[in-house]
Image (cartoon, rainbow, N blue to C red; front, side, top):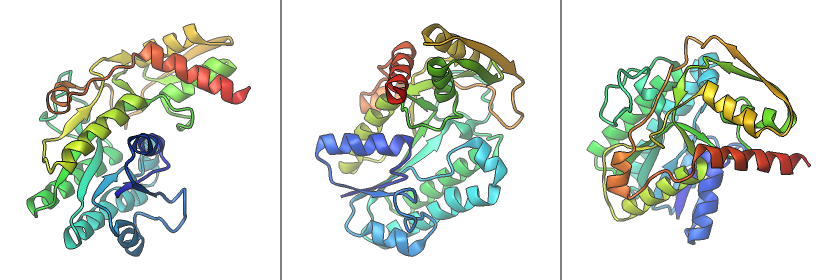
Length: 292
């Protein structure tokens, strides 16, 4: 039995679907499924851990803007709750723990592509919370817990994603028409499709089921695309007329990131397979079908 925290989120819902296909028993845990399933609640976590052999920890305040607006909630959810979860794992049957971290831990990198061992200097509250989370996981490892870390970048491809995330916002405008607004058009990011990310997590879970401890691993495409290029691609695929309006980048956001995927290829046999053209085209088609 595998516990999936944040099971109703972008990555969580797709991971649960993948585990169902693979015939793996899992338990969903998410406050959006049940208000009592709060990752900050010790008793709720204890109940959720009963009988599990592994935990994929996806639950978090997952947006940079949300963390900036409510830093206390971010710390409670991303840091204090993870510390509690790790302690309870160590005190109990010691299920393995896979922690979902973020490219935000690097801040504004001094070189691209970024390797997993590059310096981590987060520039916002969310990034600092994820770095704190990695430190918690590393301490749990030192205490004897089988625990690994994977880092995501700009995951996209799900029609149920947050509407204000770049890929989703551009895709919706491509379906309905209107103005695509982007902050910092020259900012370049590594967009990775949700199906690829889910496959990477599944491969990492299999390694952990074999009791394998590994260094942090990027699940990234290794390809950089500027927001301006992304919006332009969405405009060429648009079903209705669109305009593109650029605004200055926000000072708490990372200016660019492209990750090095070579460690995932070496240790997991994983590479990103879905191109941006293919992934964005499918997302637009899914949104169009959903809206009739």
